[in-house]
Image 1 (tube, rainbow, N blue to C red):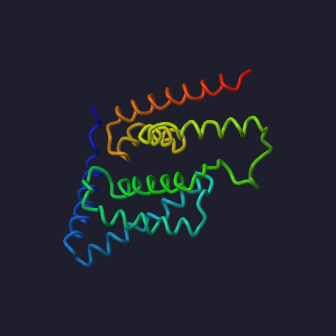
Image 2: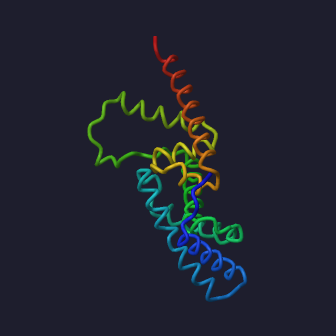
Image 3: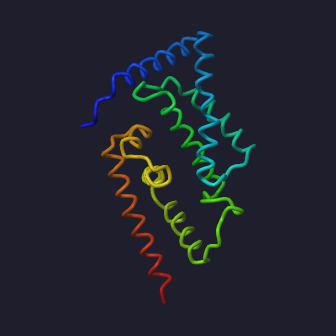
Length: 193
């Protein structure tokens, strides 16, 4: 059973829900206030992009921010008030960014080239090996594994973000890790003489 939501957070979620509902009603003031709150989108995308090693340049990031804002605006009627507005919006930012990265066929980098220390070729190859294996997981398992390892989120946070239970997040994580282990072991055996 999930822990109860703190009273203050519940009131905040209710206020967020009311703001979204008023914006759907067409009130200019509430639409303007909601747009103010959505100014977090470019910051969220920039922070996530930085954590991935700046896989998108500034122009691509700006385009993605506009695309994400349009998506959030069009789907705001789906906001159910179970989390803060920003947590709900982060889901859009995360998925839009990861989809853009996948479509572009780019791999997140761990550090900028000029910041990188000397790395042995085997280490760099092994790291790419993991990313390629991770791409073979189902999208739902991939998301949970990435959030757990790259974003260092708890299962409760992942569950809230993806709108699944923490137990489902945990199950997807362990399923993904087991599948990842199998893929990597198979490849290791293929490479050994």
